[in-house]
Image (tube, rainbow, N blue to C red):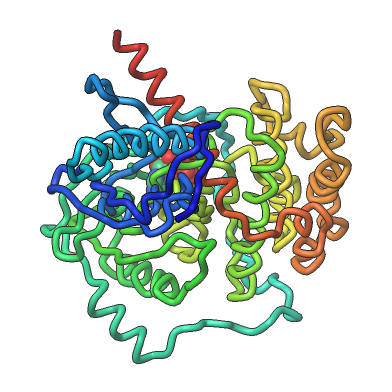
Length: 440
Ligand code: ATP
Ligand code: MG
């Protein structure tokens, strides 16, 4: 037998325990052989496996008088186990079979508040700016991973019909469309469905559908999974993986050690897209999504020129994350995405957009020296990374390989998803607590 020391109480390890996860669909028992090795994150992963549709960020247990106690960290997990082992010992001493440890997952709401800059200028899309060809030829050629047989399977299995989708709450509204959380009844899967009204000909609809085909082939842990797209009347619906942490624009200032891991994922995602000769063209915090598993994925990249142009015809606008050369209507390439990485991460680090607001004219991004992160608050590597990404001359910004090899990225490229996971869970918990307070 093992002796466990939890919260300074020595406890006899009971050679495994049974944890009963109480879900709306019923109880799920799971046995834990070595409770001493159990950590909060492992348990959360186990809960999510039995409740894939819910956003679980914490769970509760009941104390001896039936009060619910929340567990959100390893420390609180230890306290729960300590309490449970004591109860178990008492039950044993009284000749009783110990009850399983009952836990009640706390499923949260998806974040909905957003800070939108709402910046618009009258720049129409410039056909000369369609610069897929500007992507460097030196890049690795198309590295599509899936075989055609597999692709066929995906196309058949992946087909989603409008009538099989149950729309739930609205997740947000952007420049072109509205995003809903939805449930695909047949696939038993939660989706994010972006619905964009488009008054275009059937010919253009077909062109968009064929341009979107490349999304089926995108296969990267740093890119949102695409399931299907379809037109119903004059609306296109694009079904993708749902990310329960939402987009980064809703988070306040993000600590550097978390931001570093997020940057690694973003740079990996962009490098993957660039290797497929796809420019993202809309890198910004609202297009970086996170989940409670600590994954970070890019969405809304411009694979369909026709779709981008059709949206732009209805919603004339552009955003403040665009590189100076794009604002000036010049040719642009990968380096424009790199600028957008720089300005996005600067905003996420500071908790505010780095140019003065309201931004009357994007012209100041073209004319003025780019802002620099305060060296007193951030590491030298981070400051250097942002400064390099935000060089006014596109060619002076890091190219894909240099970006991956930057010391800031190398430092945080440790595969530690737990840092982001814990941070997302904590932020969602805080948001929930604030919402609850607001309701009282
Ligand atoms: P813009 O249209 O100017 O690019 P945007 O990115 O904020 O702005 P949308 O792309 O329409 O607008 O997205 C609206 C919001 O929906 C996002 O900010 C995000 O919070 C949420 N959202 C989008 N896709 C997903 C997803 N896959 N999972 C969870 N939330 C999502
Ligand atoms: Mg978006």
